[in-house]
Length: 332
Length: 218
Ligand code: SF4
Ligand code: SF4
Ligand code: FES
Ligand code: FES
Image 1 (cartoon, chains in turn blue, brown):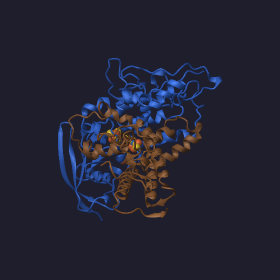
Image 2: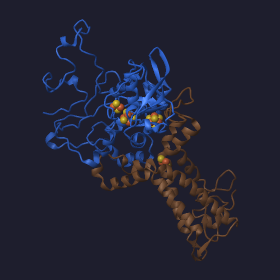
Image 3: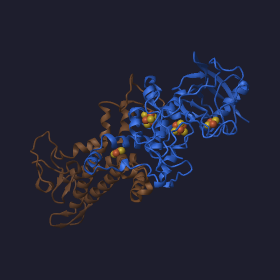
Image 4: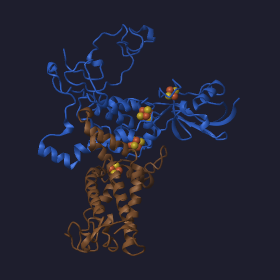
Protein backbone atom coordinates (compact mmCIF):
# COMPACT_ATOMS: atom_id res chain seq x y z
CA UNK A 1 0.00 0.00 0.00
CA UNK A 2 1.19 3.45 -0.74
CA UNK A 3 1.61 6.52 1.34
CA UNK A 4 0.40 10.02 0.53
CA UNK A 5 3.18 12.41 -0.30
CA UNK A 6 3.26 16.07 -1.07
CA UNK A 7 3.97 17.31 -4.59
CA UNK A 8 4.19 20.74 -6.13
CA UNK A 9 3.71 20.94 -9.88
CA UNK A 10 4.00 23.95 -12.14
CA UNK A 11 0.73 24.50 -14.03
CA UNK A 12 0.21 27.06 -16.72
CA UNK A 13 0.93 27.94 -20.32
CA UNK A 14 2.83 30.53 -22.34
CA UNK A 15 0.82 33.30 -20.73
CA UNK A 16 2.02 32.37 -17.26
CA UNK A 17 1.24 30.01 -14.45
CA UNK A 18 2.20 28.99 -10.96
CA UNK A 19 3.09 26.07 -8.75
CA UNK A 20 0.18 24.11 -7.34
CA UNK A 21 0.07 21.69 -4.46
CA UNK A 22 -1.10 18.10 -4.61
CA UNK A 23 -1.11 15.16 -2.23
CA UNK A 24 -0.64 11.97 -4.19
CA UNK A 25 -0.33 8.31 -3.31
CA UNK A 26 3.14 6.83 -3.83
CA UNK A 27 3.84 3.09 -3.97
CA UNK A 28 7.01 1.08 -3.71
CA UNK A 29 9.17 1.11 -6.80
CA UNK A 30 7.52 4.08 -8.46
CA UNK A 31 9.20 6.87 -10.35
CA UNK A 32 8.23 10.52 -10.67
CA UNK A 33 6.52 9.90 -14.01
CA UNK A 34 4.23 7.37 -12.30
CA UNK A 35 3.10 10.09 -9.95
CA UNK A 36 2.34 12.40 -12.86
CA UNK A 37 0.29 9.64 -14.43
CA UNK A 38 -1.57 9.12 -11.16
CA UNK A 39 -2.25 12.85 -11.02
CA UNK A 40 -3.63 12.69 -14.54
CA UNK A 41 -5.74 9.68 -13.64
CA UNK A 42 -7.16 11.23 -10.49
CA UNK A 43 -7.00 14.92 -9.68
CA UNK A 44 -5.82 16.70 -12.80
CA UNK A 45 -6.87 14.99 -16.01
CA UNK A 46 -5.65 17.99 -17.98
CA UNK A 47 -2.05 18.01 -16.71
CA UNK A 48 0.17 18.08 -19.80
CA UNK A 49 3.39 16.06 -19.90
CA UNK A 50 5.47 14.44 -22.62
CA UNK A 51 6.50 10.83 -22.29
CA UNK A 52 6.86 7.74 -24.42
CA UNK A 53 9.01 4.86 -23.31
CA UNK A 54 9.16 5.08 -19.53
CA UNK A 55 12.51 3.38 -19.84
CA UNK A 56 14.91 6.29 -20.15
CA UNK A 57 15.41 5.72 -23.83
CA UNK A 58 13.19 8.16 -25.71
CA UNK A 59 14.24 11.38 -24.00
CA UNK A 60 10.70 12.79 -23.86
CA UNK A 61 10.06 13.12 -20.15
CA UNK A 62 12.70 15.75 -19.34
CA UNK A 63 11.60 17.96 -16.46
CA UNK A 64 13.10 19.68 -13.47
CA UNK A 65 12.64 17.80 -10.24
CA UNK A 66 13.49 19.77 -7.13
CA UNK A 67 15.34 22.16 -9.38
CA UNK A 68 17.52 19.52 -11.02
CA UNK A 69 17.00 18.63 -14.69
CA UNK A 70 16.10 14.92 -14.75
CA UNK A 71 14.18 12.32 -16.69
CA UNK A 72 10.86 11.84 -14.91
CA UNK A 73 10.85 8.14 -15.72
CA UNK A 74 14.32 7.56 -14.30
CA UNK A 75 13.93 9.41 -11.03
CA UNK A 76 12.88 6.95 -8.36
CA UNK A 77 10.62 8.10 -5.60
CA UNK A 78 12.80 6.14 -3.21
CA UNK A 79 15.52 8.77 -3.67
CA UNK A 80 13.39 11.23 -1.69
CA UNK A 81 12.55 11.23 1.99
CA UNK A 82 9.02 10.12 2.89
CA UNK A 83 8.23 13.60 4.13
CA UNK A 84 10.04 15.49 1.39
CA UNK A 85 8.05 17.74 -0.89
CA UNK A 86 8.83 17.05 -4.54
CA UNK A 87 8.65 20.05 -6.83
CA UNK A 88 8.24 19.44 -10.55
CA UNK A 89 8.68 22.25 -13.07
CA UNK A 90 9.09 22.38 -16.85
CA UNK A 91 12.50 22.82 -18.47
CA UNK A 92 13.54 26.36 -17.79
CA UNK A 93 15.56 27.12 -20.89
CA UNK A 94 12.76 26.53 -23.39
CA UNK A 95 9.43 28.32 -23.74
CA UNK A 96 6.51 26.61 -22.04
CA UNK A 97 3.68 25.32 -24.18
CA UNK A 98 1.59 23.99 -21.34
CA UNK A 99 2.33 22.62 -17.87
CA UNK A 100 5.40 20.39 -18.20
CA UNK A 101 5.56 20.53 -21.98
CA UNK A 102 8.08 22.94 -23.47
CA UNK A 103 8.84 24.00 -26.99
CA UNK A 104 12.24 22.50 -27.71
CA UNK A 105 12.46 23.63 -31.34
CA UNK A 106 15.63 25.58 -30.46
CA UNK A 107 17.36 22.21 -30.48
CA UNK A 108 15.97 21.15 -33.81
CA UNK A 109 17.03 24.40 -35.38
CA UNK A 110 20.53 23.90 -34.04
CA UNK A 111 20.47 20.33 -35.30
CA UNK A 112 19.62 21.55 -38.77
CA UNK A 113 22.45 24.06 -38.68
CA UNK A 114 25.00 21.40 -37.81
CA UNK A 115 26.65 20.13 -40.98
CA UNK A 116 25.68 16.54 -41.62
CA UNK A 117 27.98 13.61 -42.32
CA UNK A 118 29.94 14.25 -45.50
CA UNK A 119 30.38 10.94 -47.30
CA UNK A 120 33.86 10.22 -48.63
CA UNK A 121 34.37 10.83 -52.29
CA UNK A 122 34.37 7.82 -54.52
CA UNK A 123 33.02 5.30 -52.04
CA UNK A 124 29.51 4.12 -52.65
CA UNK A 125 27.20 3.59 -49.71
CA UNK A 126 27.57 -0.04 -48.78
CA UNK A 127 31.28 0.05 -49.46
CA UNK A 128 32.14 1.96 -46.31
CA UNK A 129 34.70 0.07 -44.24
CA UNK A 130 35.83 1.18 -40.83
CA UNK A 131 37.78 -0.36 -38.00
CA UNK A 132 36.31 -0.56 -34.54
CA UNK A 133 39.13 1.44 -32.89
CA UNK A 134 38.49 4.25 -35.31
CA UNK A 135 34.77 4.60 -34.66
CA UNK A 136 34.85 3.85 -30.97
CA UNK A 137 35.08 7.44 -29.84
CA UNK A 138 32.23 8.54 -32.06
CA UNK A 139 30.07 5.70 -30.82
CA UNK A 140 29.96 7.06 -27.30
CA UNK A 141 28.10 10.08 -28.64
CA UNK A 142 25.59 7.93 -30.47
CA UNK A 143 24.13 6.96 -27.13
CA UNK A 144 22.49 10.37 -26.95
CA UNK A 145 18.71 10.09 -26.55
CA UNK A 146 18.10 13.77 -27.29
CA UNK A 147 16.49 14.49 -23.97
CA UNK A 148 18.01 17.98 -24.14
CA UNK A 149 18.71 17.98 -20.44
CA UNK A 150 22.23 19.12 -21.23
CA UNK A 151 20.95 21.93 -23.44
CA UNK A 152 18.58 22.95 -20.68
CA UNK A 153 21.21 22.92 -17.95
CA UNK A 154 23.93 24.77 -19.79
CA UNK A 155 24.23 28.13 -18.14
CA UNK A 156 25.25 29.76 -21.43
CA UNK A 157 21.63 29.76 -22.58
CA UNK A 158 19.74 28.87 -19.41
CA UNK A 159 19.63 32.41 -18.14
CA UNK A 160 20.78 34.14 -21.28
CA UNK A 161 18.23 34.00 -24.05
CA UNK A 162 20.38 36.45 -25.97
CA UNK A 163 23.05 33.77 -26.42
CA UNK A 164 20.74 31.35 -28.15
CA UNK A 165 21.41 32.48 -31.72
CA UNK A 166 25.17 32.14 -31.27
CA UNK A 167 25.31 28.97 -29.20
CA UNK A 168 24.41 25.47 -30.31
CA UNK A 169 24.83 23.75 -26.97
CA UNK A 170 26.52 20.60 -25.71
CA UNK A 171 24.29 18.22 -27.61
CA UNK A 172 25.56 19.66 -30.88
CA UNK A 173 29.13 19.84 -29.70
CA UNK A 174 29.05 16.09 -29.28
CA UNK A 175 27.57 15.86 -32.75
CA UNK A 176 30.38 17.99 -34.12
CA UNK A 177 32.96 15.93 -32.27
CA UNK A 178 31.37 12.70 -33.39
CA UNK A 179 31.67 13.67 -37.02
CA UNK A 180 35.09 15.27 -36.68
CA UNK A 181 36.37 12.03 -35.19
CA UNK A 182 34.52 9.90 -37.71
CA UNK A 183 37.01 7.98 -39.83
CA UNK A 184 35.09 8.46 -43.06
CA UNK A 185 33.74 11.96 -42.69
CA UNK A 186 35.08 14.15 -45.43
CA UNK A 187 34.68 17.63 -44.00
CA UNK A 188 37.79 19.44 -42.86
CA UNK A 189 36.23 22.57 -41.44
CA UNK A 190 34.25 21.22 -38.50
CA UNK A 191 36.62 22.78 -36.00
CA UNK A 192 36.32 26.21 -37.57
CA UNK A 193 32.60 25.72 -37.84
CA UNK A 194 32.28 24.76 -34.20
CA UNK A 195 34.22 27.82 -33.14
CA UNK A 196 32.65 30.32 -35.50
CA UNK A 197 29.08 29.15 -35.86
CA UNK A 198 28.29 26.85 -32.98
CA UNK A 199 29.73 29.07 -30.28
CA UNK A 200 32.17 26.56 -28.83
CA UNK A 201 33.99 29.45 -27.17
CA UNK A 202 30.97 30.26 -25.02
CA UNK A 203 31.39 27.00 -23.15
CA UNK A 204 33.54 27.46 -20.08
CA UNK A 205 33.85 23.72 -19.44
CA UNK A 206 32.07 23.80 -16.11
CA UNK A 207 30.69 20.33 -16.85
CA UNK A 208 27.03 20.74 -15.90
CA UNK A 209 26.02 19.05 -19.15
CA UNK A 210 28.07 16.00 -18.17
CA UNK A 211 26.48 15.99 -14.73
CA UNK A 212 22.92 15.77 -16.00
CA UNK A 213 23.34 13.51 -19.03
CA UNK A 214 21.20 10.41 -18.36
CA UNK A 215 23.29 8.42 -20.82
CA UNK A 216 26.44 9.33 -18.91
CA UNK A 217 28.15 10.65 -21.99
CA UNK A 218 31.34 12.42 -20.96
CA UNK A 219 30.28 15.45 -22.93
CA UNK A 220 32.88 17.86 -21.62
CA UNK A 221 35.89 15.58 -21.35
CA UNK A 222 35.40 13.57 -24.50
CA UNK A 223 33.74 15.99 -26.89
CA UNK A 224 33.99 19.65 -25.89
CA UNK A 225 37.57 19.74 -24.64
CA UNK A 226 38.85 17.65 -27.58
CA UNK A 227 37.02 20.03 -29.93
CA UNK A 228 38.55 23.02 -28.16
CA UNK A 229 41.94 21.37 -28.50
CA UNK A 230 41.33 20.78 -32.19
CA UNK A 231 40.53 24.46 -32.58
CA UNK A 232 43.75 25.27 -30.74
CA UNK A 233 45.59 23.07 -33.24
CA UNK A 234 44.33 25.17 -36.07
CA UNK A 235 44.71 28.57 -34.51
CA UNK A 236 46.98 28.77 -31.52
CA UNK A 237 49.51 25.93 -31.33
CA UNK A 238 53.10 27.14 -31.84
CA UNK A 239 54.57 23.76 -32.77
CA UNK A 240 51.87 22.86 -35.26
CA UNK A 241 52.33 26.23 -36.90
CA UNK A 242 56.09 25.71 -37.04
CA UNK A 243 55.66 22.18 -38.34
CA UNK A 244 53.46 23.44 -41.14
CA UNK A 245 56.02 26.06 -42.09
CA UNK A 246 58.98 23.72 -42.04
CA UNK A 247 57.69 20.38 -43.21
CA UNK A 248 54.72 21.61 -45.18
CA UNK A 249 52.73 18.76 -43.88
CA UNK A 250 50.56 18.06 -40.95
CA UNK A 251 48.97 14.98 -39.54
CA UNK A 252 45.87 16.94 -38.89
CA UNK A 253 45.18 17.32 -42.49
CA UNK A 254 45.47 13.68 -43.34
CA UNK A 255 42.67 12.94 -45.75
CA UNK A 256 39.71 11.19 -44.21
CA UNK A 257 39.82 8.55 -46.87
CA UNK A 258 42.09 7.75 -49.72
CA UNK A 259 39.85 6.68 -52.54
CA UNK A 260 40.69 3.42 -54.20
CA UNK A 261 41.88 3.98 -57.76
CA UNK A 262 38.87 2.18 -59.17
CA UNK A 263 36.58 4.74 -57.66
CA UNK A 264 38.35 7.92 -58.62
CA UNK A 265 35.22 9.17 -60.32
CA UNK A 266 34.31 11.60 -57.53
CA UNK A 267 35.28 15.22 -57.74
CA UNK A 268 36.34 17.07 -54.61
CA UNK A 269 34.88 17.56 -51.17
CA UNK A 270 31.14 17.78 -51.61
CA UNK A 271 29.90 21.29 -51.64
CA UNK A 272 27.23 22.34 -49.21
CA UNK A 273 23.92 24.07 -49.51
CA UNK A 274 24.60 27.52 -48.25
CA UNK A 275 21.07 28.81 -48.07
CA UNK A 276 20.37 30.40 -44.73
CA UNK A 277 23.21 29.73 -42.39
CA UNK A 278 26.55 29.62 -44.09
CA UNK A 279 28.10 26.15 -43.94
CA UNK A 280 24.87 24.37 -43.32
CA UNK A 281 24.11 21.33 -45.35
CA UNK A 282 20.94 20.55 -43.50
CA UNK A 283 17.43 20.81 -44.84
CA UNK A 284 15.27 23.71 -43.88
CA UNK A 285 12.37 22.95 -41.63
CA UNK A 286 9.58 21.26 -43.51
CA UNK A 287 5.95 21.96 -42.93
CA UNK A 288 3.11 19.66 -43.73
CA UNK A 289 2.18 19.33 -47.42
CA UNK A 290 -0.09 22.13 -48.57
CA UNK A 291 -2.53 22.59 -51.44
CA UNK A 292 -1.91 24.94 -54.35
CA UNK A 293 -3.52 27.80 -52.50
CA UNK A 294 -0.96 27.39 -49.74
CA UNK A 295 -3.45 26.02 -47.22
CA UNK A 296 -3.54 22.64 -45.64
CA UNK A 297 -6.19 20.16 -46.54
CA UNK A 298 -8.89 19.72 -44.00
CA UNK A 299 -8.22 16.06 -43.54
CA UNK A 300 -4.95 14.28 -43.84
CA UNK A 301 -6.85 11.51 -45.59
CA UNK A 302 -7.31 13.78 -48.57
CA UNK A 303 -3.56 14.08 -49.08
CA UNK A 304 -1.79 11.99 -51.68
CA UNK A 305 0.29 10.34 -48.96
CA UNK A 306 -0.67 10.05 -45.35
CA UNK A 307 1.97 11.08 -42.88
CA UNK A 308 5.52 11.51 -44.05
CA UNK A 309 6.90 9.61 -46.99
CA UNK A 310 7.91 6.11 -45.99
CA UNK A 311 10.15 3.75 -47.92
CA UNK A 312 7.37 1.19 -48.05
CA UNK A 313 5.61 1.89 -51.29
CA UNK A 314 5.13 5.62 -51.56
CA UNK A 315 8.73 6.61 -52.06
CA UNK A 316 10.80 6.38 -55.20
CA UNK A 317 14.47 5.55 -55.00
CA UNK A 318 16.93 7.09 -55.28
CA UNK A 319 15.48 9.96 -53.33
CA UNK A 320 15.37 13.27 -55.13
CA UNK A 321 18.47 15.25 -54.09
CA UNK A 322 16.38 17.88 -52.33
CA UNK A 323 15.11 15.26 -49.91
CA UNK A 324 18.50 14.18 -48.68
CA UNK A 325 20.01 15.76 -45.66
CA UNK A 326 23.51 14.97 -46.76
CA UNK A 327 25.41 15.43 -49.97
CA UNK A 328 25.76 12.14 -51.73
CA UNK A 329 29.09 11.65 -53.49
CA UNK A 330 29.07 11.33 -57.21
CA UNK A 331 29.44 7.70 -58.28
CA UNK A 332 28.02 5.50 -60.96
CA UNK B 1 62.02 35.12 1.02
CA UNK B 2 65.00 34.36 -1.16
CA UNK B 3 66.45 32.13 1.53
CA UNK B 4 66.08 28.55 2.67
CA UNK B 5 65.31 27.26 -0.80
CA UNK B 6 68.35 25.06 -1.03
CA UNK B 7 70.06 22.53 1.24
CA UNK B 8 73.67 22.48 0.20
CA UNK B 9 74.62 19.40 2.21
CA UNK B 10 72.18 17.15 0.46
CA UNK B 11 71.64 19.11 -2.74
CA UNK B 12 67.92 19.61 -2.19
CA UNK B 13 66.39 22.40 -4.24
CA UNK B 14 62.75 23.33 -3.86
CA UNK B 15 60.76 23.08 -7.11
CA UNK B 16 59.58 26.68 -6.80
CA UNK B 17 63.19 27.89 -7.20
CA UNK B 18 64.18 25.58 -9.99
CA UNK B 19 66.06 26.27 -12.14
CA UNK B 20 67.72 28.92 -10.05
CA UNK B 21 68.99 31.54 -12.49
CA UNK B 22 69.61 34.84 -10.76
CA UNK B 23 72.90 36.05 -9.30
CA UNK B 24 71.50 35.46 -5.85
CA UNK B 25 71.48 31.71 -6.32
CA UNK B 26 74.14 29.90 -4.32
CA UNK B 27 76.65 27.94 -6.33
CA UNK B 28 75.26 24.43 -5.95
CA UNK B 29 71.67 25.37 -6.68
CA UNK B 30 72.33 27.06 -9.99
CA UNK B 31 72.60 24.09 -12.29
CA UNK B 32 71.84 26.09 -15.37
CA UNK B 33 73.95 29.19 -14.86
CA UNK B 34 72.81 32.56 -13.56
CA UNK B 35 72.02 34.75 -16.54
CA UNK B 36 69.75 37.15 -14.61
CA UNK B 37 70.86 39.88 -12.20
CA UNK B 38 69.55 39.90 -8.68
CA UNK B 39 66.65 42.23 -8.26
CA UNK B 40 63.91 41.76 -5.76
CA UNK B 41 61.18 41.69 -8.39
CA UNK B 42 62.79 38.88 -10.36
CA UNK B 43 62.02 35.49 -8.88
CA UNK B 44 64.86 32.98 -8.75
CA UNK B 45 63.04 30.74 -11.18
CA UNK B 46 62.11 33.60 -13.49
CA UNK B 47 62.00 31.36 -16.54
CA UNK B 48 59.73 28.71 -15.12
CA UNK B 49 57.58 30.06 -12.32
CA UNK B 50 55.35 32.19 -14.58
CA UNK B 51 54.75 29.21 -16.83
CA UNK B 52 53.98 26.99 -13.90
CA UNK B 53 51.35 29.45 -12.76
CA UNK B 54 50.02 29.85 -16.28
CA UNK B 55 49.77 26.08 -16.66
CA UNK B 56 47.56 25.78 -13.62
CA UNK B 57 45.61 28.94 -14.34
CA UNK B 58 44.61 27.73 -17.80
CA UNK B 59 44.19 24.08 -16.82
CA UNK B 60 40.78 22.82 -17.86
CA UNK B 61 40.14 21.43 -14.43
CA UNK B 62 41.19 24.52 -12.49
CA UNK B 63 39.20 26.62 -14.90
CA UNK B 64 36.09 24.65 -14.08
CA UNK B 65 36.82 25.00 -10.39
CA UNK B 66 37.38 28.74 -10.32
CA UNK B 67 34.66 29.60 -12.80
CA UNK B 68 32.25 27.88 -10.49
CA UNK B 69 33.70 29.01 -7.18
CA UNK B 70 34.78 32.57 -7.86
CA UNK B 71 33.23 33.68 -11.11
CA UNK B 72 29.88 32.15 -10.23
CA UNK B 73 29.14 31.26 -13.80
CA UNK B 74 27.50 29.02 -12.88
CA UNK B 75 27.77 28.71 -9.10
CA UNK B 76 26.28 25.23 -9.45
CA UNK B 77 24.37 23.37 -12.12
CA UNK B 78 20.87 24.63 -12.89
CA UNK B 79 21.37 27.58 -10.57
CA UNK B 80 21.04 31.05 -12.12
CA UNK B 81 24.43 32.58 -12.78
CA UNK B 82 25.04 35.98 -11.35
CA UNK B 83 25.79 37.82 -14.54
CA UNK B 84 23.93 40.26 -16.74
CA UNK B 85 25.81 39.20 -19.78
CA UNK B 86 27.81 36.13 -20.57
CA UNK B 87 30.27 35.65 -23.38
CA UNK B 88 32.28 32.72 -22.06
CA UNK B 89 35.70 32.27 -23.53
CA UNK B 90 34.90 33.93 -26.82
CA UNK B 91 36.71 37.21 -26.30
CA UNK B 92 39.40 39.06 -24.40
CA UNK B 93 40.59 38.22 -21.81
CA UNK B 94 39.25 34.70 -21.47
CA UNK B 95 40.03 33.76 -25.04
CA UNK B 96 43.59 33.53 -23.78
CA UNK B 97 42.64 30.32 -22.02
CA UNK B 98 43.52 28.83 -25.39
CA UNK B 99 47.22 29.24 -24.65
CA UNK B 100 47.01 26.25 -22.37
CA UNK B 101 48.87 24.36 -25.07
CA UNK B 102 51.94 26.61 -24.74
CA UNK B 103 51.80 26.27 -20.98
CA UNK B 104 51.65 22.51 -21.36
CA UNK B 105 54.82 22.41 -23.46
CA UNK B 106 56.50 24.60 -20.87
CA UNK B 107 55.27 22.39 -18.06
CA UNK B 108 56.77 19.37 -19.81
CA UNK B 109 60.15 21.08 -19.84
CA UNK B 110 59.76 22.13 -16.23
CA UNK B 111 58.96 18.56 -15.24
CA UNK B 112 62.19 17.50 -16.95
CA UNK B 113 64.14 20.07 -14.97
CA UNK B 114 62.50 18.98 -11.73
CA UNK B 115 63.35 15.39 -12.56
CA UNK B 116 66.96 16.44 -13.03
CA UNK B 117 66.88 18.17 -9.64
CA UNK B 118 65.49 15.07 -7.99
CA UNK B 119 68.22 12.92 -9.55
CA UNK B 120 70.95 15.40 -8.63
CA UNK B 121 69.72 15.30 -5.05
CA UNK B 122 71.00 11.73 -4.76
CA UNK B 123 74.48 13.12 -5.20
CA UNK B 124 75.18 14.99 -2.04
CA UNK B 125 78.60 16.30 -1.10
CA UNK B 126 81.04 13.59 -2.06
CA UNK B 127 78.94 10.68 -3.19
CA UNK B 128 75.66 8.89 -3.14
CA UNK B 129 73.24 10.05 -0.49
CA UNK B 130 69.74 9.10 0.32
CA UNK B 131 67.38 10.63 2.84
CA UNK B 132 63.75 11.38 3.49
CA UNK B 133 64.19 14.52 1.40
CA UNK B 134 64.96 12.36 -1.61
CA UNK B 135 61.73 10.48 -1.16
CA UNK B 136 59.84 13.75 -0.92
CA UNK B 137 61.52 15.13 -4.04
CA UNK B 138 61.02 11.96 -6.07
CA UNK B 139 57.43 11.60 -4.91
CA UNK B 140 56.76 15.16 -5.98
CA UNK B 141 58.34 14.63 -9.39
CA UNK B 142 56.38 11.44 -10.01
CA UNK B 143 53.14 13.18 -9.14
CA UNK B 144 54.08 16.17 -11.29
CA UNK B 145 54.63 13.87 -14.23
CA UNK B 146 51.32 12.16 -13.69
CA UNK B 147 49.55 15.51 -13.49
CA UNK B 148 51.30 16.87 -16.56
CA UNK B 149 50.66 13.73 -18.58
CA UNK B 150 47.02 13.63 -17.60
CA UNK B 151 46.51 17.10 -19.06
CA UNK B 152 43.78 17.38 -21.68
CA UNK B 153 46.23 19.01 -24.07
CA UNK B 154 48.56 16.08 -23.62
CA UNK B 155 45.73 13.67 -24.31
CA UNK B 156 45.01 15.55 -27.49
CA UNK B 157 48.62 15.65 -28.64
CA UNK B 158 49.21 12.02 -27.71
CA UNK B 159 46.57 10.82 -30.08
CA UNK B 160 43.30 12.63 -29.56
CA UNK B 161 43.84 14.68 -32.66
CA UNK B 162 44.09 11.65 -34.93
CA UNK B 163 41.23 10.57 -37.11
CA UNK B 164 42.50 7.05 -37.62
CA UNK B 165 43.73 5.29 -34.52
CA UNK B 166 44.22 2.12 -36.55
CA UNK B 167 46.95 3.79 -38.57
CA UNK B 168 48.89 4.85 -35.47
CA UNK B 169 48.94 1.92 -33.03
CA UNK B 170 51.66 3.33 -30.80
CA UNK B 171 50.03 6.69 -30.40
CA UNK B 172 46.73 4.94 -29.84
CA UNK B 173 48.22 3.05 -26.89
CA UNK B 174 49.74 6.24 -25.55
CA UNK B 175 46.38 7.95 -25.91
CA UNK B 176 44.66 5.12 -24.06
CA UNK B 177 47.18 5.45 -21.26
CA UNK B 178 46.82 9.21 -21.06
CA UNK B 179 43.02 8.87 -21.18
CA UNK B 180 43.14 6.67 -18.12
CA UNK B 181 45.22 9.23 -16.27
CA UNK B 182 43.03 11.98 -17.62
CA UNK B 183 39.96 10.72 -15.79
CA UNK B 184 41.91 11.38 -12.59
CA UNK B 185 43.08 14.81 -13.64
CA UNK B 186 41.16 16.58 -10.91
CA UNK B 187 42.62 14.38 -8.21
CA UNK B 188 46.12 14.79 -9.58
CA UNK B 189 45.66 18.55 -9.75
CA UNK B 190 45.01 18.69 -6.01
CA UNK B 191 47.62 16.10 -5.12
CA UNK B 192 50.37 17.99 -6.94
CA UNK B 193 49.33 21.22 -5.31
CA UNK B 194 49.83 19.38 -2.03
CA UNK B 195 53.12 17.71 -2.93
CA UNK B 196 54.54 20.98 -4.25
CA UNK B 197 53.70 22.75 -1.04
CA UNK B 198 54.98 19.86 1.03
CA UNK B 199 58.26 19.64 -0.90
CA UNK B 200 58.78 23.35 -0.61
CA UNK B 201 58.05 23.23 3.08
CA UNK B 202 60.33 20.26 3.66
CA UNK B 203 63.27 21.84 1.88
CA UNK B 204 62.69 25.11 3.68
CA UNK B 205 62.48 23.42 7.04
CA UNK B 206 65.67 21.43 6.50
CA UNK B 207 67.50 24.46 5.08
CA UNK B 208 66.44 26.59 8.04
CA UNK B 209 67.44 23.84 10.45
CA UNK B 210 63.96 23.44 11.87
CA UNK B 211 64.56 19.73 11.83
CA UNK B 212 67.32 17.60 10.36
CA UNK B 213 66.83 15.52 7.24
CA UNK B 214 66.32 11.86 8.06
CA UNK B 215 69.31 10.19 6.34
CA UNK B 216 69.41 6.56 5.28
CA UNK B 217 72.70 6.69 3.36
CA UNK B 218 75.42 9.31 3.46
S1 SF4 C 1 30.50 22.37 -20.02
FE1 SF4 C 1 30.09 23.93 -21.54
S2 SF4 C 1 28.42 23.13 -22.78
FE2 SF4 C 1 28.50 21.91 -20.88
S3 SF4 C 1 27.05 22.93 -19.53
FE3 SF4 C 1 29.04 23.81 -19.10
S4 SF4 C 1 29.20 25.64 -20.40
FE4 SF4 C 1 27.49 24.38 -21.18
S1 SF4 D 1 23.96 14.40 -24.59
FE1 SF4 D 1 22.99 13.40 -22.83
S2 SF4 D 1 21.87 15.07 -21.83
FE2 SF4 D 1 22.37 15.80 -23.85
S3 SF4 D 1 20.59 15.34 -25.13
FE3 SF4 D 1 22.02 13.61 -25.33
S4 SF4 D 1 21.40 12.13 -23.77
FE4 SF4 D 1 20.42 14.09 -23.25
S1 FES E 1 9.63 8.44 -21.03
FE1 FES E 1 11.17 7.94 -22.44
S2 FES E 1 12.91 8.77 -21.44
FE2 FES E 1 11.37 9.02 -19.93
S1 FES F 1 46.83 20.77 -16.91
FE1 FES F 1 44.74 20.49 -16.48
S2 FES F 1 44.04 20.27 -18.50
FE2 FES F 1 46.08 20.67 -18.92
